Image 1 (cartoon, rainbow, N blue to C red):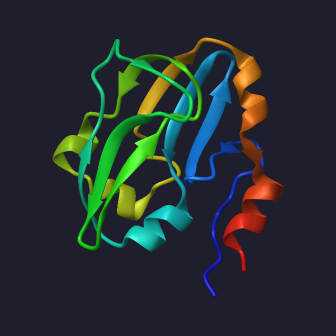
Image 2 (cartoon, rainbow, N blue to C red):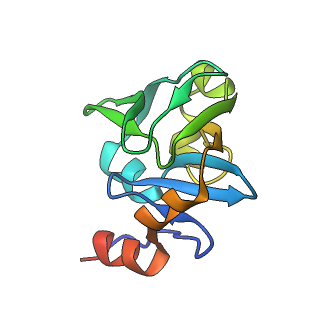
Image 3 (tube, helix red, strand yellow):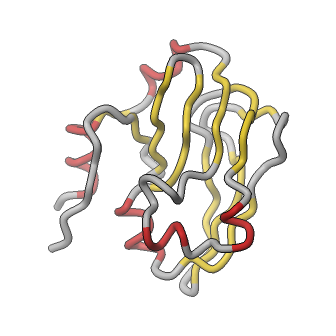
Length: 129
């Protein structure tokens, strides 16, 4: 059984995105579990800087050799930064989905939405069978 790195300080979605909160800026990526399930990531489609995203709505697409999956915004707000290096080298997500493989940074509209996300103990229950 695989062991996944699930940082306690992050928030998580049921769709396996992680959200790292630094004041009102949320960095978003996919979890190690999601990367493991996808297999080798070959393509990502991410929004433009300045785009508005809505909690629970699709903000991009990730494709692997196995499947294509939508990416869901953990919070609502404005995309203030996109990890453009992933467009040229999506393999970074395979190597380091929790750090260098981050996807977007969102300036969140309200911290209240964080209450809708899972914390690490609940996310662990979802992925560790």
